[in-house]
Image 1 (spheres, rainbow, N blue to C red):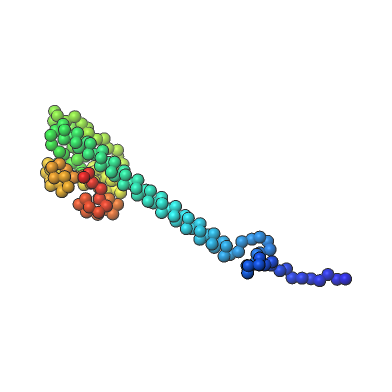
Image 2: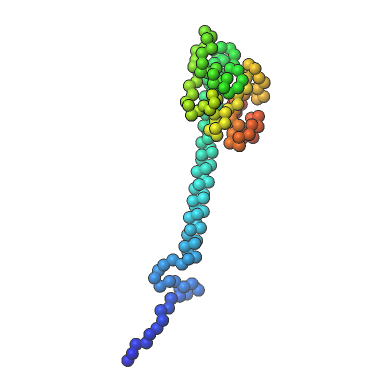
Length: 166
């Protein structure tokens, strides 16, 4: 008796879905996996970006605290704060003014911490330094204000995302 030829049929799972006979994934299943992987990658990237931002903020706060110590030591030796301006601050903390009371240098800067003779924050902007020696500090009127203008790059006089020593 001759064999009957039957067409290959895909088995049913009983719940309305069909399975492929060779165990391969369907296009929809692959698209779902790609969408999930894309979502996971974007979450990891967002978390990494947030971690970098927090690290930059911590670095700026640490630099301000270090400069505070140097400025306070300078003041303790000379009984006057360095003149206002970032470049003036760098010069005052690093170069001997031929004063017998000067016991510096009070700070040593690496080349990557300076731009045009000014100490810069993690975002590449110079710190703002205003001293009572020749200026009017807004937040600490009897000494000095020292702050970073922060991530947005806009000087908000110590408000907004600015990071200061007060």
